[in-house]
Amino acid sequence: MGGQHLTWENRIAIESLLKAKVSASQIAAVVGCSKRTVYREIQRGQCEQLNGTTYEMYTIYSAQKAQNRADQMNDLHKGRPVKLCPELAAHLEDYIGTKHYSPAAAVREILLQGLALPQISANTVYRYIYRGYLRLCGLDLPVGRYNVKQKQGEQRTAKAHRNDRSIDERPPEVETREDVGFWEMDTVVGTSAGPSRCLLVLTERKTRFEIVRMLESKTAREVLRVLRELRQEFGEDFRKLFKTITCDNGCEFAAAKEMEQFAPIYYCHPYSSWERGTNENQNKLIRRFCKKGKSMACVTADHAEYITLWMNNYPRRLLGWRRPADLMAAECAAMGIKLAV
Image (cartoon, rainbow, N blue to C red; front, side, top):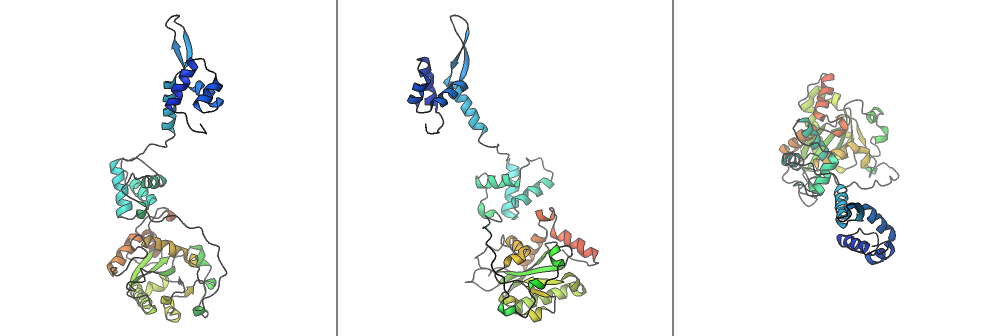
């Protein structure tokens, strides 16, 4: 049999050969399995039968009993039963497919509603999606498989920013995430073939509070315009909330001297996006709305505002399922700042 399972036909043959008083070795040769397999099969298929003449019980091999037992074992090893009712499926499809929640966040939100629904884990939701139990697919999931992290090469300062602050000079309190006011800044762009319109994103390291603004072009002039608008919006509280800003070496952040009037600016090393890990992870959330490689011609300031509200009110596992808006509001209240979130 070469490791294969016995079939119904094999069991019928074993039963017939045993009745004909054929040895286990000969049965194994006929069926095409090992003698050990025959012995195990005989043991598993044994049953008691009444002798109609003597009215005594005797033991025989039953192909039917052996098959029933094999079918039962197969059912036990098929995995856990599917705990999915129409109402739970509808909630999952709404949160993941429409509201762009991750499976973990969707499960959490459904649980908080206190509905009388089966409780399942995020891993189970992933399994149901891949098996086709839900009207969702891999494209509805926030993140696919992560690539293996490449070995970090030698770090060097970009030529354009040799006279500017390097991330190596950043205050140590930025790394601890104990204080609010330390931001990372980046741009989210679309296809290079379309208009140069893109999004400027600023991520607060402690609370993961996000600010998303539309740029008409990926230029330093547009970045300065947005920073100027933010300073006007926050007024005297701007300096309390924007203590440092860390960005990459993109052309849109080339005006270091001009940006210094808003907050101390620090530049990452070239090809080291992991130094702005918080920013990069937040950008994955934005990509749920602005797919990579797609044109941003239709993106407006209203779209940017919607993404901002969604991200700041999205429950995050790394924050203990709290929302960035709530954390930032608490931080601002402690500093006597009124923030509209």
